Image 1 (cartoon, helix red, strand yellow):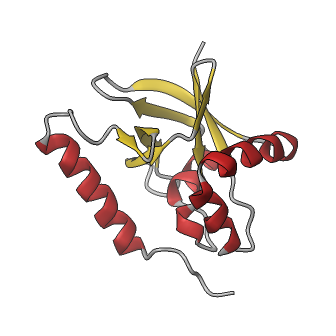
Image 2 (cartoon, rainbow, N blue to C red; image 1 turned 60 degrees about the horizontal axis):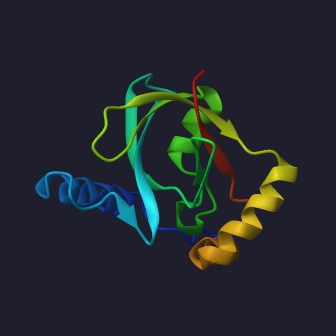
Image 3 (cartoon, helix red, strand yellow; image 1 turned 90 degrees about the horizontal axis):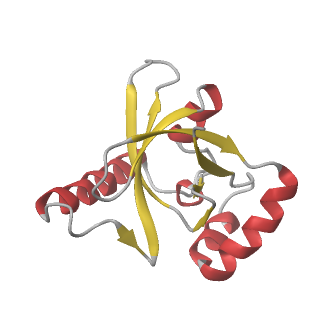
Length: 147
């Protein structure tokens, strides 16, 4: 199966534009997208060991935890940030107007995935459309506060 998701260059450009909107608006615009909160996730690069940041939406939140979707626009390969957290789940997360906070990235198990996925695609059909583009299961990740 060929990779049907956006190119790496497109993804980098989208993140650059998103960060630019936030910066140019002095943080007033860009922290909500498609009725979802936006967060900045910083992972540790699995090969480089360097911090890697990406802007993501969270379609579901519970008890101070934020769910993120490793869709990569329906690509046949998971996003780099997902591969990074699979190796090192300790992450930093920044929300609108707040400093980064340490969190733990927990990949959702198969049972919980089914329950959450149906809720997400009911409210945000774009994720369901992404799943139709790829044979891989699009993973879900909870960003959980450290206790």
